Every structure is written in structure tokens, then in C-alpha cells.
Length: 162
Ligand SMILES: [Cu+2]
Image (cartoon, rainbow, N blue to C red; front, side, top):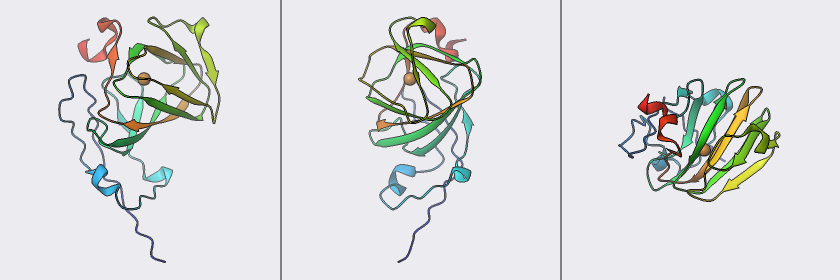
């Protein structure tokens, strides 16, 4: 049996509220029609301009800003906070390492979160505000069907507006 290996090309990430065509260097959604076998070492990590500084993203499938299935991994540092925000599509999140504290609501409140441990899963419907924080380094995998984006409940929390 022949295994088709598809290398991931470095992906420059630009998430945008406005769905501006992003600079995904790789046309990964076309490639995803073939087999994709990816090792962790193949992932290309990039900064995330739409999240508070310190997060990293590796897009595996996408591009997320188009109406295609997407899959990406996100890494968050120690003591990281993601203010209340929502997404235009269903979010499916799986914790791959660390403990990810997530809550539902309009304002980040560390007392109103659930600690999702490794293997924990969260599914949130579109436009439901949610927030999260970490005490340790965390890696999650998010997948869904785009177009993806992020809207902060309080626009002042949007790092792109700072
Ligand atoms: Cu989110």
C-alpha cells in the first residue's frame, strides 16, 4: 500500500474579524481531499494576532476563514487569559496537554470556569460568549467548519485594536 505523505508548508496566520483573505501560504483545504498524515514535528507554529500576545497556532486543515472544514492547534502560555468572545461557527475543542479553564458568559470570571483536563472536550454553539484562562501551558485542538473568526464581547479586548 502506498502512503501519500503531504508536507505542510509554512503557514502565515492572519485571523481577522473582517474575514480579510488570510495569508495561508498553503492551500491546505485542497490537500485535505487527499490523505493527510501529520506528525507533531511537522506543525508550523505562528503567532495569533487576534488573541492576546503569547498564543501560538498551527493550522492543520483550512484555511479557517473559508467555508471549509478546519483543524488547528493552539498553545497558550502560563497564566494566560482569553477575554469573553464568540465565534461564528460551532467550536469543537479538545485539550491535548495541560488544564484549560473555560466558562460561558459575557465577562471573564475565573470562578465560573470548568477545568478541562487532557482529553476533555468542549463544544460550543455559534455566537455564545465564552472565556478561558490557564495556570500552566496548555495545548488544545480546535476543529469545525469555517468561515471562522473571533469577536470580542468588549471591543477593547480585541488585540488588533490596541
Ligand atoms: Cu474561542
